Image 1 (cartoon, rainbow, N blue to C red):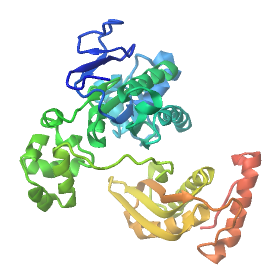
Image 2 (image 1 turned 45 degrees about the vertical axis):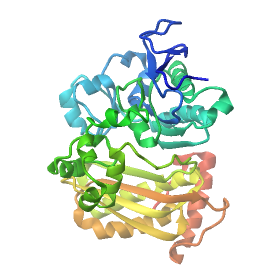
Image 3 (image 1 turned 90 degrees about the vertical axis):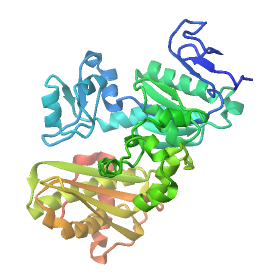
Image 4 (image 1 turned 30 degrees about the vertical axis):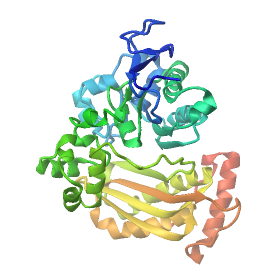
Length: 422
């Protein structure tokens, strides 16, 4: 069907296929994708551009040409920001007070997670129509394995992906960046280049030339600490890794050294696994003022337990692993986990376990942040069943909790409140 030994091109606007040219011969658009292996690659990574900020702009045209930051709270951080804000040096996870200094005229908007999830679901519903092998990573990115989809859709992977990008842009007024390659590592690497609204291809034949001059910070899992360690070993770019053998990297960096060795050669055997079941559910609170009073901290923990429990029940899920996350006044981060033999979803049970974990870490106070997550999720038992309590003393409270849930579902969340004696 296609000449794979020649450099093929496709127009991003009209999807016309042709041999390499500067402009599309049909619509004259300069927005084209060209690569020798364009029609033989099937692993893709799709990343929505500045997702939360872009959604806010799409819902308010007056924000179009203004720097927008999504974040909230006196002690909060930048959740995300638009590309105009990024020009001023603003980055995700940056404290809001720092962002305000860098860009005083930035418009700061509190996150609207419900809206972002709704838009995310719309985009993913389009992806799942392309292939059942879809792995979502967050609300704004996913991996797709499009192998064999030509028989299903009569179109190549690149055609399906370009059509997806155009639909998202036309229907939702949002842009996505796409990476296409032979494995998930290279696909994600490709999608991060030339953002926003990009489509980058890394082929089998040119992958080593493509990545050799890139920073090792592009590798997933290479954070500030590992980056510093690599730099101390004169490893700053892929080409530096390429010169080392597997034994040397494993000795210096353990099992992750083996993965570094493979990624340095553009190899990644990790498959794209459909994740119909969410991996974890978490909530956290950043306090406006550091908390040291035990009762106040436990009240916050109870609130988190209720919020996590509410989402678990809504999604009809339960989990076995509970993790407590704490950040103290000097930004020291600590976490502690417990794995239960039974599946948990009730706020009372979540609080019992997380409170035990909290008692082990109260010495960290005063606290500026507290978080709670439940992982190792699975579909919950039949609805209405009263599960065995972690402590028989709390069985009545658990029955009361389920009864309150029924009242709330019928008359509204704020019609009745739960209470505890600490």
